[in-house]
Image (cartoon, rainbow, N blue to C red):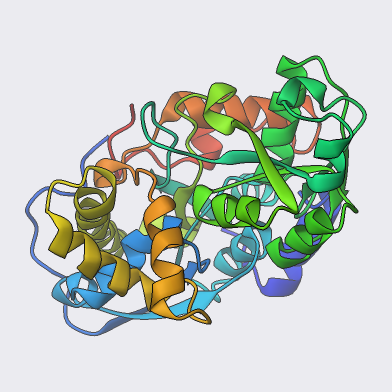
Length: 341
């Protein structure tokens, strides 16, 4: 298998246009102190990893975890391929698919998902666009949609929404979420889609407006996935299973406290305080708490993967010629770790 360093992985991203057995079977924990680095964004949607850290689930599995934080999906894929990061959670991107095709990365499970009845990702427009009449997704024709990079999940969502509304969009890459927010507030871009814990506070500013829900266009969308290097997936199975078990426990706690709300008010408050250690760390708790609660979307139980959604995403990347047409689902996914549904 070809060894990848960061330079190789970045070169591949450039060349591509920027673009089941359950893990919860009872098994002995890893030998103590297996050091791993986990890639994450400071989003509520990454809370399964944060809970696993704070409640000792990684430690129970013999894993000594360090987090490395990113501001976009594709740099995280590069980091996994070059082994700067061992495991990560983020959206499927063209870069991740191309790295999988080169034998450098594998999707091993599911994470954030859209689910009927649970508030999900929002479609946003700038105040200028809203005042110009873009009050629903049906009126997006001719507008500028913000993305981090070509072949990102934002590109995928915008393209699907536009196709279903028979609209034509232009896509503006701005690399990171922060610059996108700034551009949307100032009217440099017209539209974007993002998770609710970011979308709802933005809409309260008056500079941005919510005009729809992503789930109306992408029901049951597998928003993010768990992935690792192909080497870890093939040759470090015990460590990979241990990571997924701890991650799944964290997801279960998060879902019970803030999504299903079956654990009561005290448990919900405790969970929000835990998440605040990693999300909105620059805000006082009183200001961050509401956004964290509002942003609670389902994280897949037992890291189960919605294969239909992943296949739909892969088909779109191939149709748009952002990845090679020869890439298959099995090229991208190692289906031996979690339930596929």
